[in-house]
Length: 58
Image (cartoon, rainbow, N blue to C red):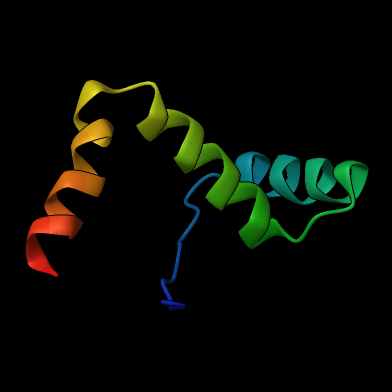
């Protein structure tokens, strides 16, 4: 399932850095953001509960 989200960058340098890094890695900006968010969540203990929650919904 695919979801959409609009991200507004109030810091022009951050946005420019994102675009440059995406080009360097040959990724889209959205893929790079998704990768960064996934890494952040995986580093948190709560993220490990998501599969358990999803399974209980099924």
